Amino acid sequence: MNLKSLSKIALRVLAVFFIFEGIGNLPMLAQSISYYGSTVTVKWFPLWESAVLLAPIVLGIIVWILAGAIAAKMVDRNGNDESTIQLDAFTLQTMAFVTLGIFFII
Image 1 (cartoon, helix red, strand yellow):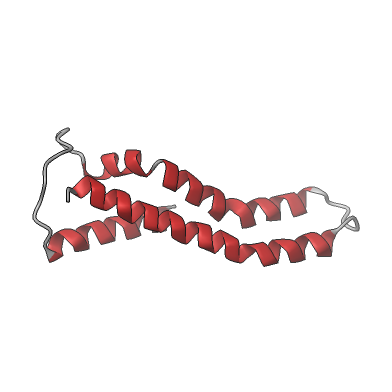
Image 2 (cartoon, rainbow, N blue to C red; image 1 turned 90 degrees about the vertical axis):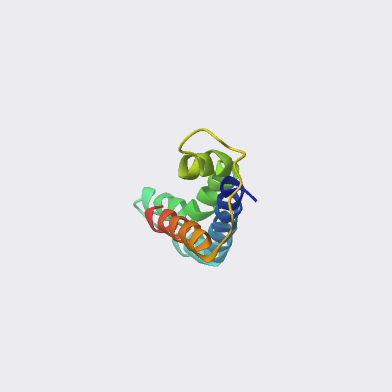
């Protein structure tokens, strides 16, 4: 398995995590919509709160779709996509920490 495929798999797992986080926000979104209803004088606040609560789902979909391009930027330094590597503990730890770093950046 090459390093690009491994990083693409890791990014897709991260995307699934983001989507599940967004699904976990849906009850808060429903509560927010029912609370604000039509009694709020400032109409942009419910819209802003809805955007913030739905952002992980949108981000997860974007990361899922662009996983190949992001993986190419992560590991492709010399343009050789088909080079295989020996998977040892150091390589797996490196890819795990790069994926975790992308999680904290996003």
